[in-house]
Structure formats: structure tokens, C-alpha cells
Length: 437
Image (cartoon, rainbow, N blue to C red; front, side, top):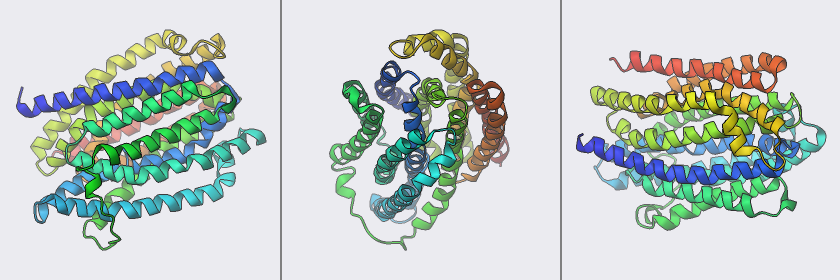
């Protein structure tokens, strides 16, 4: 094994271990939530409330600013005076307007929330709608935190400092678990609001404290909208933001469909998707994130780029396929082991396990799409991922709409799987056609 491959493997294993620890801490909160609430309609309010803040935060973090910064940071550093100061000048010109943009988006969302949430989830009654609006307004602090964090973490990734940010994510997950586990029952579903915001604040403070030289000392915010790297960043970020909007719109739409099935169905959908989300996060951190700097470095060296991408795809298939098959066959025992206690009944477990089994094709195809999506970002061709996500959204939205009326939660899960087919298919087409030049 070459030194570069060995280093990639070591980094991947370390990141996977950290993300596993953080993922286990965060996911360990899910059985506590299940025991405490079951399929309580109060959870429907929280998950509907988190929809818009979640999309805005995703634009700032992994799918948006954090992804856009590394290739531009590296390119700008190398094409001027070959010094890090050029890259940090770009970062300091980017994060203040990113923060301002998040503040504007959060403010507009805060004002419009009473009109937006009934459109997102028309099945919620007036009481749950009112609670959801209050929760959503509180959760809008999350994207404000995420905007500078996304830029700063992107800069650290460009400098190959992957372990520290991953450790902070794990710490935030531990904080989330602690609040869910220790909060008094009187807080109800507001416990989840507090835990979500505390995890974000942990990531913000942690970056500034843990990286005093590599990050904090370099942060000198400037109001320089004419910085030469900003147009490139905007050109890359705009389709990335649209892609995140399209990609996560699927979750928002499916929650809306679930709200119209029956009370508690939104919560059941979340309990079914949580194991899959935890696994995708682990695969992303352990396989894709370590490969992304190498993809960005070799973006103009097509043979090396293709070799890195194909190696990453093979590792992803080898990891994701057995997981998908195992979950499809063992969804019942998995759900009973994780959730069936307290207020989460055997009937709840049967509903959630059927949805989990139906979601396994979605899991595998979505996992397969992750290295391909990051490869389009590395080559600054994010419109391919946007097109793939838009096609996937169309399939899942139409399929979920009709299937949910016939099969309820199971139909929503099948609709998600239908949407993952064009998502992966378009990106595979990009790999075999576009990178053959």
C-alpha cells in the first residue's frame, strides 16, 4: 500500500471512530426520545418546526459553505503568491457576508413562519401548528451559528485538519445526548429544541478554543466585497445552496405527507429514518470526507482524480451494501431493540420497522451518491448534483404523494426509494461520461 493510501486509510479510520462516537452519542438519544414520547403528536410539532432551520443550516454546513471553501482556498493560495495568507484573506472576506446572509434569511423566516408552516404540514391541527411556529422561531438560531462555522470548518479541511473538527462534532453530539437524557420531563418536546441549539453552540465555541493558532488567530473579518475569490465562491455556492434546498426539500415534503396520514406519523417517519441517517453520516465521515481534499487536489489531473473517485466508490459499495441488506432483513428486531420500551408500543414498532425495511433501497443509493456528489464539487461542477437532486425530488414527491394516500407511512418510504434512483443514476452518468474526457 502506498504512503498516500495508507495515510488516507488512517485518517478515514480515525474520522470514522470519532463520528461513530458522536453518532452513537446522538443516536443514543433517539431511544430515550422514543421511550419518553412514543409517537406523541408533540414530536410531530418539533420535527415540522425543525424543517426550515434544518435546510438553512445544511446550506451553511456540509453541503454548502463547508464544501465550497476547500477547493477555492487551495486554488487561490496556489495561484497567487503560494502562501496561506491569500487563502485566509478569502476566508476573512467570505464569512462576514455569509453570517449577514444567514441573519437576513433567519429574520425573514421568523416573520413568515406562521404562514410557512401550514403550507409545509397542512395536516397539523391549530394547536400543534402554534407550538411548531414557536419552536421553529427558536431553532432559527441554528443557521446563524452554522454560517461562520461552515466557512471556518471548510478552511480547516483545506488545510487537512480533519480530526479536530470531527472531534468537536462528536462533542456536540455528546452535549445533545446529555440534555435529552437529563432534561426534566416538564420541558416536553422543547427538550429537543434546547439540545439542538446547545450542540450548535458547542461547535462554534469549540472551533475558536481548540484552534487558537490554526483558526482563531487567522480570523480578521474584512468587508471586502470586491475580493477576487468571492465571485468564484458565489458561483460555486449558489448551485450548492440550490442543491441543498432541493435535496432536503424531500424531507420537508415527506414530513408534510406524513402529517396528513395521522397524528404521530411524522414522528414514526423520523424514527424509521434515524438509523439510516446515522449510518450515512458515518459513511460520509469515514469514507467521503477523507477523500475530498484529494479529490479537490487532483481535480485538474483527470487520471488521478478518476482513480481517487473510483477507489472511494468501491469502498462505499463494500460498506453500504451489506448494511442495506442487513437492515432490510432485520428491521423488526432492530426497531424493537432500539425503541420498544416506555411509551413506544409494539404497534409503534411494527409501523416503524416496515418503513425502515422499505427505506433500505433509499439508504444504499443515497450512500452511493455521496462520493459522486462531492466529486462534482471538487471539479466545480455542482450543477450535475443539482440536476440529480431535482430529478430525485420530482420522483419522490410524486411517488410519495400517491403512495401515501394508498399505503400511508409505507408509501412515503417507498416514494423516498423511488427518488434515490435518478439521484444516483444521474451522478453515475456524470462519472462515466464527463470524467472520460
